[in-house]
Image 1 (cartoon, one colour):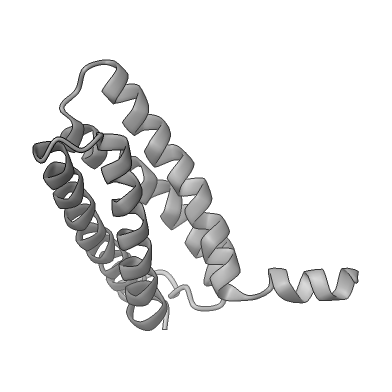
Image 2 (image 1 turned 180 degrees about the vertical axis):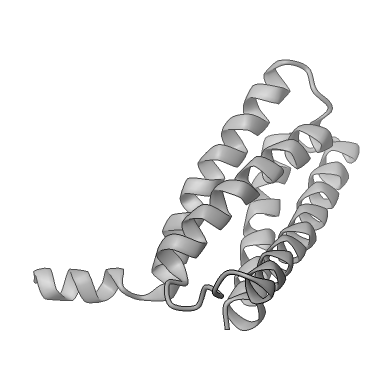
Length: 133
């Protein structure tokens, strides 16, 4: 049973999901705190997402894509730039979804949930196929 659990934990998508949960905790925690302070919902969403990006890089590069992280130098700078690029796509998608939801009268927290799912799918594809290939 333990061997099967270790094998399951070794699957890259599962590790990515766990890293995403950690980054999501940072993102949503900041988002909710900023909403409570009266910050405009799309802005709060963008700030939370940016904080989550930093957390995600740390977890992805150290626990998810181990062995696929470029060595120091130009290759590492390129990889970080691609990671940030994928994050910017996720940020734009998230901010747009929360803005659209908020503008249409939807609870920003529900819009954020939709944005989380969309952003997860898009960034997983970009990171697994482009950034850490």
